[in-house]
Length: 222
Image (tube, rainbow, N blue to C red; front, side, top):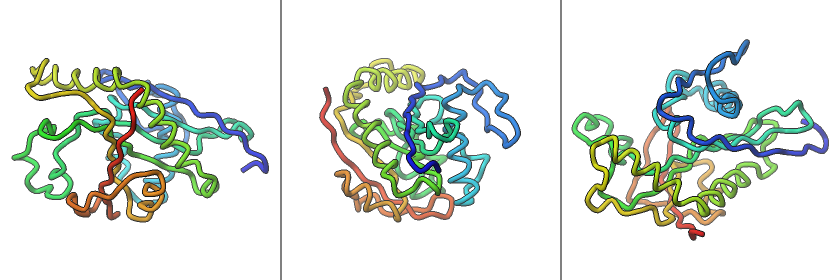
């Protein structure tokens, strides 16, 4: 890391369901991924796969094509990507998919019975840049954007409802500022410092061998 780093934050809109997203390799990034998504994946692979031993094959999931992605790069280190976050629009899967995975075949794909929420996931900072507040900076950036772009978030939700044949699903409503994070327990305090509250009713669950909790916050909409 440079002694006086300067950072740039870039945003990647949802790549879209027809974009064939692929894992970048250590030797090449020759694929059809958007450039910013490739940069995000470099950080995610390093932190979640190399450091935390999560599955590489599960790192790209069905939320990636429909999500907004932010990447922080270090201008003084050849624009090296160093931190990432992902904002997943509504709807979210039923929580039981995580807490009771054995019941998944009997559960619907999406939860239409609770208030719509956005979800912040894949928050990661490479080791040598930790302690600089970059995780908090990314959360603030994503929430500031969401507050001003509720229309785009609602359009993304209705797009999923439309693909299900429910263009005006009964009781669908709109996103009213509710934000969810699935926090690793070792960063629960960081999210509490940003106004998130742990929802004990969601319990605790294991993802890739790491204990998680669910936390909520409501933000004002512009």
